[in-house]
Length: 355
Ligand SMILES: NC(=O)c1ccc[n+]([C@@H]2O[C@H](COP(=O)([O-])OP(=O)(O)OC[C@H]3O[C@@H](n4cnc5c(N)ncnc54)[C@H](OP(=O)(O)O)[C@@H]3O)[C@@H](O)[C@H]2O)c1
Image 1 (cartoon, rainbow, N blue to C red):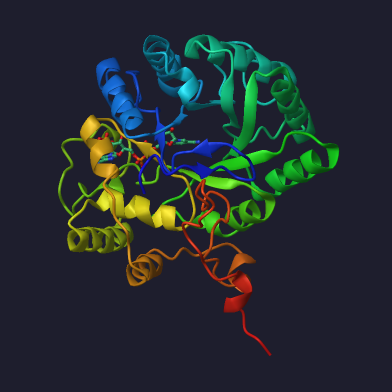
Image 2: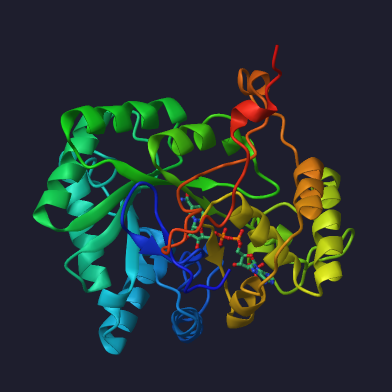
């Protein structure tokens, strides 16, 4: 799906490209599998040239360097107001300050001010809570985020890596108290990580939130460069992660065969599968050629989508297995701006037994 076929994010009027660009790999930092400022700028320019408008970063990516690279780039190109700029709070960037991280009132404000400074902007389009702060009441977090929307410093909000029950509590509270609702959930989701389909995806569908998958290629495993018993030489990430298991290679085999049939890349097939679920994946590229390869366009047939579903089917936690398979992930973000649904699935009840 081309980057300029914008979709609305969650139950909101925010129009984003069907693939976001992740900036976790922008900048050099010990322990991060990143790239140079020059390469980051090439990747950004190529993404924007194709109509891309949705950029994802976080306060602690490459220790703040990622945000600075984005801030300098948009300042120089004067394109800040053309993009949907998203960042995250949670990880403590203030050594020694117990209120420098997490999701308390003061901590969020302090983190946001630093993020805005590095990004050289006075507002964020979307502000994510990066992780669940189990020590802060979720109503304190939601009220603070609502105040920040009111002040104009942020426009929309989302959660990442938060349990379904906490998210449902927060969204219900926001609805009843007239606070700003969550419009998206950033979750690990790929052909090699589908547990989100148990609780989080049906909740998101029901409560007006899009799924925005991170690591959509499972750290590059689904990019096509991982082969059995072969060392992956051109990879920074491979230095930090264990190689794929035999079970994961069974999925990779089907992805690779499907890519060959379409004369495209394994990465493009893996991302097309996520798009067919109605999700808005975040592309992670360490090199310009990764971005180009990942953005190759491919339309998978129903049979191919089913084959990919079959080989990657996860074992979900109780009680999800009792409820039938959720083929349709999201009605939101599956709708293009002109109102045409980009993916239609039968409602869940059609797959349930009738008496
Ligand atoms: N909310 C969260 O907790 C969270 C967590 C993680 C990520 N994220 C977000 O999600 C974004 C994407 O995550 P990710 O970087 O883990 O995504 P990913 O697509 O699973 O992995 C990206 C890595 O795979 C390799 N790769 C990607 N495309 C390739 C290609 N075509 N050919 C060969 N290798 C390729 C590259 O690593 P090598 O070249 O080094 O092998 C690249 O850095 C991040 O930038 C960030 O914005 C969020």
